[in-house]
Length: 260
Image (cartoon, rainbow, N blue to C red; front, top):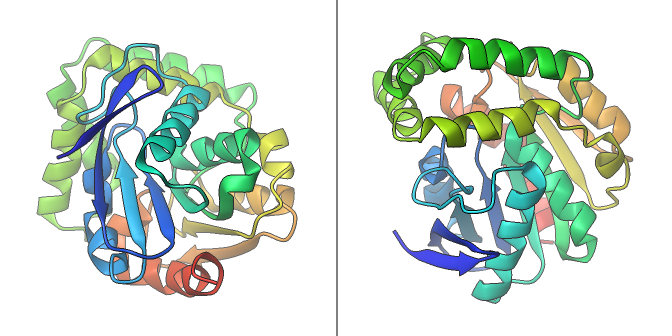
């Protein structure tokens, strides 16, 4: 897997295909493996780039994990790769990171897809962080990875994906995971989302109980002109639970906006 030095970090990434740039941003605890099926599907039409966020996968964490820092990493890495304008697709924490990317460099954002994410948790954010710290700190990352995968994916999702999700989390350093958790759940990107002028598609699994459909509905209300689609038979990682439903929702938008 190639790496690139950017913004004081060394970032691992996957890149395939040619055409308009499409940057994929993964969720908390996963890494670029999350997008394996999407990279295969989209590489015939796009220059698909999926980075491991700092502290995740093969990427370093020298400067601390915040959503704003990860956004700066991605922009710096795209600079180093010679990529200017791109479409950004972020799932869960990737939606927050996409909002920060747009705030920092709106001229580089062609369009955005925000999947299974939220704009702000308010007072519930610090409470969620405390609850997660209380649960994770005494556990091994192997135990937490297994628990998370079991609780997040639908029972109908294949065991291979369950093992990959658990393994990706298990491979993380606990402090990197906790740093990311603190930033994700205390983030408020409402103002950043309200300032987006690029075309936006918001999608959410109809069975998502981590960032429920109401959170995606709120995003669609905040972002001017945003389109909202629900993905049937999918929970928080909708691209894993129902790939065909995910693509039915996302592919037409990419064809019309990203490649247009």
